[in-house]
Amino acid sequence: MIVDLRLRGMDGLEVIRHMRADIPTRTTPIIALTALAMPGDRERCLEAGANVYLSKPVRLRQLAGTIAVLLDQQ
Image (cartoon, rainbow, N blue to C red; front, side, top):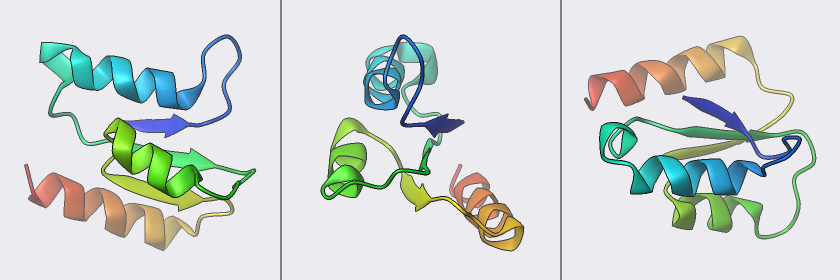
């Protein structure tokens, strides 16, 4: 699951926390993605339960490689 941190109505950290609290999505790999990286965002995302934190712009190869690693870990 790729989650943008800046969403309308619900922030991405809240989405990550909800996914980790819900049994069916508890182990779903999560990539947190943001265009507006703020100090401490990476740490907050990982603490909330994201597996990986990436800042935009993200190169397609980097994203594809990250997804491949996460899928291999499943």
